[in-house]
Amino acid sequence: MFGPVIRATNLFLIFKNSFLCLNVSSIMLQEAKCAYIIIIMAVYWCTEVIPLAVTSLMPVVFFPLLGVQSSKSVCLQYLNDTNMLFVGGLIVAISVEQWNLHKRIALRVLLILGVKPALLMLGFMIVTAFLSMWISNTATTAMMVPIVQAVLDQMDNTEYDVTMMEQATGQTNTVIELEEKNASDPTSVNGQVPDDPRSSEEKKMRKRICKGMTLCVCYAASIGGTATLTGTGPNMVLKGQMNQLYPNNNDIVNFASWFGFAFPNMILMLILAWLWLQCSFMGLNFKKSWGCGTERTAKEKAAYNVLKAEMKKLGPISYAEFNVLLMFVLLVLLWFSRHPGFVKGWATRLFPEGEKYITDSAPAVFIALLLFILPANKPKFIDIKKPFLSAPLLDWNVVQRKMPWSIVLLLGGGFALADASANSGLSAWLGHQMTPLGSIPPWAIATVLSLIIAVFTECTSNVATATLFLPVFSSMAASVKIHPLYVMLPGTLSASFAFMLPVATPPNAIVFSYGHIRVLDMVRSGIVMNIIGVFCVTLAINTWGRPMFELDTFPTWANSTTNQ
Picture 1 (cartoon, helix red, strand yellow):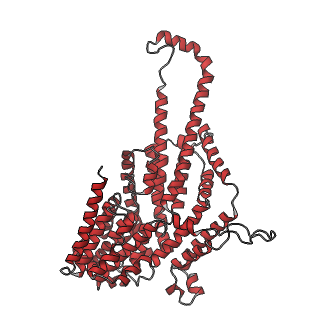
Picture 2: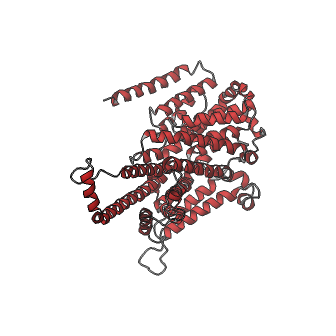
């Protein structure tokens, strides 16, 4: 009933803001014009009056109309080096999904780790986090939750069957006891004994296990995406904003440096999250959870059989899967060895001035190209009737269907905003206003900003959150003379800490749709998860992050925006 009213209101707001832009274009300063468009986009991103990707296209229209930047300058930001890195990484991830390689990896790891309750939850979290490092969080969660559900259902069915068998076996031996109890116990009716109170406790325990097992998947997906540069959108926003705001930053944020900083943080967060979920939903009974000195129960055998049956359905590894795995490993090796830092990388050794011209996007797109060329089946050397080469590993129609083009536009819109902020003078103005913050300790600033971002990202897209806040953090860092990454790194990681609400991120929504958890369950667990996340990020930035990025000094390349 309210749909037409809401759409009419949205339409009115859009046209009103559009005409207002035209009216104020002659009376505003450059900084004010840029800020006005950013505020409008921030409101649209938060309220989703129109789709996020469509809002991201607003700079293409309004920056040239207001005289902030030319159309040519704005449009260049929508498919820059960082976006090409993101597209190349996503194409490789799509090929992994297409050939079910991610499912094979997941099942193999779960079979190795075992099916004791604590180990099973840890296995689900490790697999989900690892896959989220390379493919989208949404795709990982969508694949893992059905596996979790199948395991839980089989465990539940097996427990019911075992209970029924025990009751049937003991029925003959308990006839006399039941008759005596009927004679002496007035609460029994027609020979029926009230339900054993332990059965209700077991049901409650099963519900808690279901909640813990499903929540661990969506939390691990969000945590795992932070470990690699291409793992989630906010990481790519940071990479693009650093290149945009600080062109001479010596490629300080690349795949290898990000992994060196974020991967230990991801491991720490994953362990603490596992301990928290274990304590919240399963208790700390080590004998029961870990199975110390006990044999495998019927439920655990059933869970193991489910995983084994799923693995059997996949069959032996195919030629296509092997090729995709080879390309995936090659891409990771190329990323790590391009510019390791402690020795010369392949870009410098093999190509003249390669360090200057080659970035992480080059190997990503190179491997993506190979996926469209390499055959999915073995070449036919003997059979003349069949073609020598089969269809390629990847088809463009599949990529077109699975590629999240909206995120590509969202990143582009963010880069356009950052570029306009720097060139219009808005960044310098913001930095000047934040000079009084210099009296506050840097660690306190980083912690408070992380908490703000962690709360804000619960209601807004994580990419939009990073896009809006990172340029502001950059200006603030320049004004108080601290390393930009000291505040931008915690802000970027905190943008992925959407743990409290089902609508906060797609993995949460997928898990919530299975009906095991309530909103209150997610809020209770998510509050502690946010605290864990901010604690880990604060620890990382003040320990191994300091020497890695030289965060104790204000770099010379950061003066470029200060002087603009």
